Image (tube, helix red, strand yellow):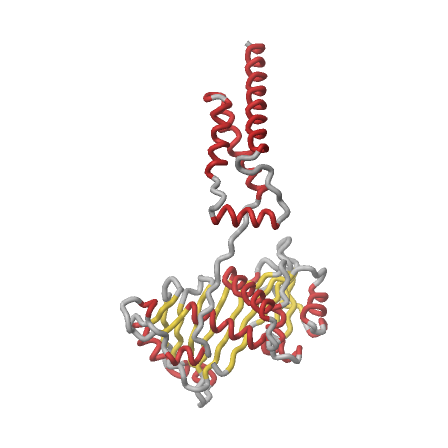
Amino acid sequence: MNNSKIDYLTMRINGYKSAEQLIDSHLGITPELFYSASRDKRFDTYNSVLRYGHITVLSDGPKRAGMCVDFTGQGCDEYCVQAKDPNALVKMILSKKKRDTVTRLDIAFDDHDGLLSIDTMLDKIADGEMRTRVASIAEIKKHSGQKGHTLYIGSEDSDFQVRIYDKSAETNILVPWIRVEMILRSKEAERIVKYLQKEVDREAPADEAKFFFDLAARYLLNKVAFIERTSENISRCPCCKWWTDFLETTTPAKLQAERRVPDLEKCAEWLMQRMSPSLVAVSMIYGAEWLIRLITFGIEQNNLHDERIIELTSNYLAMGFAPAISKGDEAERNLLQSLNEAINKRLSVMEKEKETDA
């Protein structure tokens, strides 16, 4: 890997009152350089479009969607020139706020040393010697003439796709140039950005841009690896040296899926709206003791040493919640007794009302 760069970026940005303010404060470009353009079919929910070169700023869109900034491949280069910083886009991504989202991120890795051969990759795929986390190879396209070959791994409709093509043939230059583009959309783009931000904050590297692209290369290795077939178990096969040499790493980056902490208020609301009629009906048929048995059963089922219970409890405590009861303590007994008294009292009132109506 001789060179790496951000080759496409789309972000939704919040916190600005106007597109001009966003351009001036967030992008650091003179707003007067932008001109009003017609609506963009790719972003048809936005009514206002400002454009400078291949940089587009969209506003007046859906409520709470914020504004949208779109940099094409050329736009990425133009922005770095305007910012007088080749790593300006990397810095923008790493400084992204929680309310902002990255909806597309293309990272390009270039080979000028002749390490890669698209024909070799095609042979590897045909022989079943590619290890990938992509669900399927959607298509492999071959272009004749000066366009050379283009290899697609993954679908255009998916959040992750790799495009590999002969850049030298496309640009009509004689030196070797194979480009590998990792295309991340929607959730996949947000996922890797959060991972990159977290790792950069944790490591605090002197060269954030290099660290950024090194981590991106490791992520690509985790998703796609060309292998030497030495075992029937593909997971045990070593990665081709030319692929790890190109990515300059032998260590894939494995991202763990985020675990969501249940929303207590939503859970309580769901129980109130959906479950209370059924609980009342069952209690009226089987008596209040059944509901007490239900709650007691739930308490008994909470194995205090269960990893999920420990994790959830830790998360709730970190959010400022304190448990109302603990298994086996006096508060638990008082709770069950109070529930029993309250239910019996309410059922008694309902029974008297029924007799009065009769």
